[in-house]
Image (cartoon, rainbow, N blue to C red):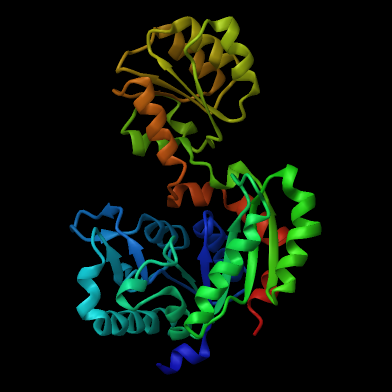
Length: 361
């Protein structure tokens, strides 16, 4: 290992949904505390291609741009998987060297480096480069992010952490601690009173319990515009609105009004020819109205939208396709969305994560 690896504090963040947003918040907090920080994602799935034809992980791009990090993308994310993994099997030693050298460049001169794992921890096990070996390579403290949302049986989280801890121990590594993320209010008491003590009985530190806040993972209207290649018909200055709910307007205005009022920071999706429905939707001041089918609205709709300050987007897709694309947007992290939600993210870090203990040995 290089000298810089031993001097820098490294935290390996592994586990489930929400890692990138939490990492951004931690890095921003550490920066605010005067620390020199680095971000490293050794292995990722290539989901975005730059104009230079280089494949990158958009999460890496988002962190780099949002924090103005000067490191090269190829150092921050040295290995990108496009389709196949087994092709790497005969070059695993070269890959290890590539990862180590890139890490050394990121770590040089830094007080702390946060390393983000591939979403599925088992990836690269088949070729001899599993996540636990990476943790050992970086001499890192490993923190597992457990997602409490969308679980029928909340106690399954204990089984999951036991399984992955066994996986790490198999390779002579260990999971040092846990952050329980995205906890719905109806699970809060059980998580605090039952789940957390059970995790601690396993010898793991619980560094935080984060309550569910849809806003933290929600996209902005600008993210929606980019993902759907939408035309902005009105209120181009309101694209930082957060989109927490998706509501399809496919009923009579009177019936739809009840659903529009229940939604929080909604994207309302309907046809551009549904003037009566659009006008009703605008009365509830949603985050955005998305008009499908390439149908331009009546001029009265644009006047009303300007009055209430709601962006109007036009897309060529049918309603079903539009909604499916919106669901995909909800899993995308962008520099803009991180900056827009920075205050909320930092508040969560400061109130619900024991960030000082994270940086201790």
